[in-house]
Length: 246
Image (cartoon, rainbow, N blue to C red; front, side, top):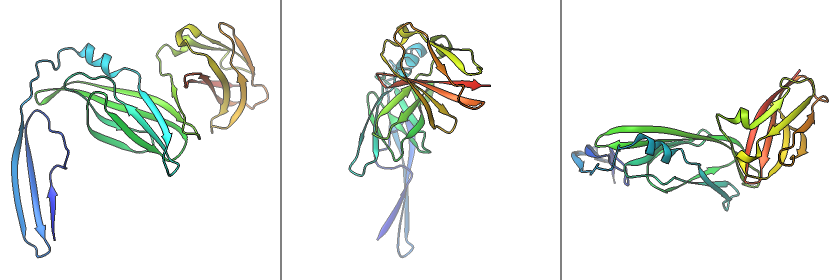
């Protein structure tokens, strides 16, 4: 019986240009054989690396996520890549549970991942655009998600305008807080507003306010500490804000 040690695995993608490939074969008697050769990929890059703005627009699109249980009861998530142009690829994905996938995935590929536990995860995808042998543009897209016990996905809003869209006052507070949400920016129906301690224990749940109305929550029954307010919408998106109770 012989064993082989290839420099590349079956199905690997090669970048434009020349790549050295090698194989080392050996058997149980100590005999070895080695070979190497070059794979040359000639690429037409007329449409590549033309616009960093177009690359950023393509790779900053919202993540398309779906999930369902498998036969073992684990939650399988599908992530569909955005519509990418020629020479644009996703090259690595951090799934938030200690797992990292690397490769070269192109336009609208569907990538699968298995989550064995419910909870909060941060997903980050690295995108790159290639021209000849070089990387001309790169970007990282991240999102926080919550995997529910019923294999549901809720996406967090990560916006630089979040402080303007959701206003909590006073914060810090001695007990009462006012919550005002710019509903027009979200265009979704609010579902619930929940308060958690820093360990993730639900302490208070309150129905969502109607549009353009400020809602009051009373936290005076809880001790001085840092708390998390999670505001959930009908499309599965949620916002998390920190509240300091004095």
